[in-house]
Length: 601
Image 1 (cartoon, helix red, strand yellow):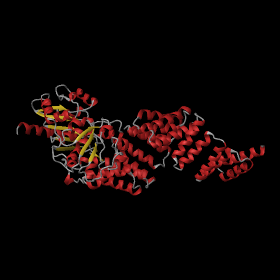
Image 2: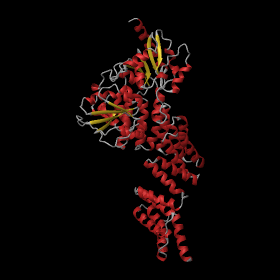
Image 3: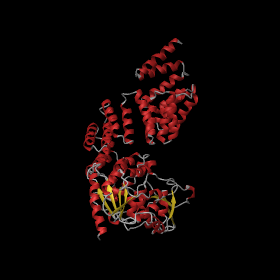
Image 4: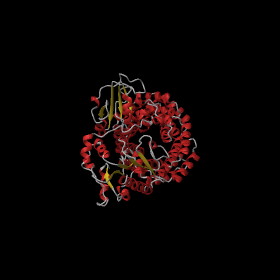
């Protein structure tokens, strides 16, 4: 027995020292004398796993399990099965390990990671939290829980997890990197910058760390420094597609579109399936008016946004409409993303009706239902309605895919306006509640921040102003101002304006966009940042001046102050990032002229 134990101990020492061939020979000698030695079979399996022979490893570990079923054997079997992408079998092995020992930390962690990748968010969270409960110093469990929380938009909880991990391993570059990623998502760019710079100190040869640093600098509009960070990263790894994507994104924010396109196309050469590159490239193509290519690339939005695209269910129940004949058929059109998107593209519904469908239904955001009810021949349902109440349709289609289906070019944009109308009784009702004299101007200074969608929240921060930014306009002679601002926090900013100049605020009595449309119909002009109000005014064919951020939205095209989508629109673009004062001054001068013309036609 002593000789046998000595042989096993020698094999184990060789294994731990990395002398795998020597260890294998030792385990085989042990098994010659004791063929039911489960640990020897298990360790033989781990040697095969380390050398890439996964099939042999699985067979050997299963032989060990047949002799003695232990949590450790099941846990390692799950790891080998996972590497073979047999995820169902791996999950079963880890569950069996926990069945054998409910305090087996490793299997809880691996199950949490598996379920995280499969999108089982609540199960993943529970498993990772259980692993941390059993081992509070489990760095990877803290890390993955932080990533999971960050992906859900729960930034405070995510930070707690990542900072716990950093307290355990403060010199772990990967932890600083992930905390930086999280802070970028939360738009805390300066803190994120510090994290990435610390990660680079710890791991200076990582191209992806420079990519993350570039994102933090882009978020602060420090474009020259962001470009330098990209250059450092590309010098380390010129074949890194994600770094080319980040470079292109930075150049796009800086309105260097030709260079941005080159960077994104380089990313696609390296990684043809890179969805972020395709999606960002589509924004350049649409902004340049190259609609044929741009609409095709824009279809990648559903994969890029995933669940954050606000796509309602049903999209997998019926066939997606690809342009098939609709006469006698039924089609369900799904509104997506923001209210402004729905207001802009609802113009395609009458065109669809002309195809002769037996039934045409639009599923829209609840605030738009009463307004859309005015479109003749359309069955309008709210997304808050019970899904089961919607009858089966032959096809479904996303609202923002209609320009592609109709082959829309700059020359064929359906721009007949108005294509929406406020109900006449509402117009009369609101007319009595608005100023009765003067040139009436509606104001909107901020968009919907959507904190649950970090990327859109970052865009909103660039397009939005504070109410006081409009103060230079408020003493314009002959003008009466009306607030059209939604949102409790942004509406409250009116209180910071002197009562003598403060715009009338009727929005407390507004229930939906039908009310808002009625108010807009009573006004002579709407001045708004790039929000749904711009689309509403344009759809109603009311004069609208749109204040556009420096890296303006693709829908307003580039280098023009009009819009082929809305004949009544005029664009006032930022000439420098984050500089609104100069824009407001141009608007002030234009408004004075407009008010004088109204007073003396």
